[in-house]
Image (cartoon, rainbow, N blue to C red; front, top):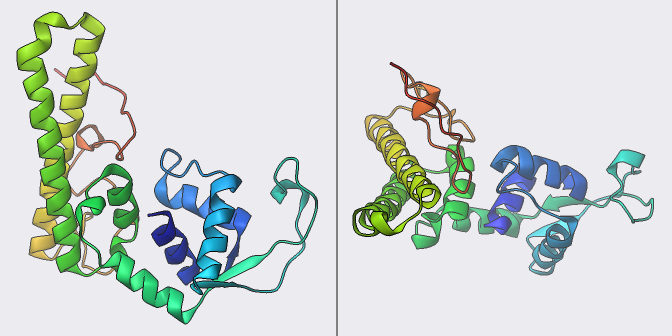
Length: 222
């Protein structure tokens, strides 16, 4: 999934490593994009070896762009190749089980504006099934083991169940929008937001947190 995100960003414009790290954080969110230089640069080297990206001319680095404990040197700019664009098209068209998991779904959703509707629907429906399975597992735990759980563990399980139920409702709305040809904002297809947002007529309290992120519990309104 890291590969898909990097190729997708480089297809927008050439970038150096520091820019890529910032854009990954902005695109995917701080939780899923807490990417260190130790994991970013080996991936870039692997993509270079595969012929999917190449190095462009170096540009001078500023003080704030130099990672700690590294030397002041020029920034290597990376750009996607024709083969890399083909690889990105292959990756973004995938709809297997890995696209339903938290990280995989988040990365694919971030690039939904470049994905055809049929693919978006398959991923959304697969994600819904995944979350429904998780929800049923939590319900089973609460029904069978609630008496053996302490108050805090029980509250954590209830919080997880609540998050699953809200994400299922959110996914169902997205699926309905896709089937009717609308985007999450209710506008015409072609400008899909990069990250999940508030759908038309839907308040923030009904939006689930991004996969892998815990949402703060709020008291119910009277």
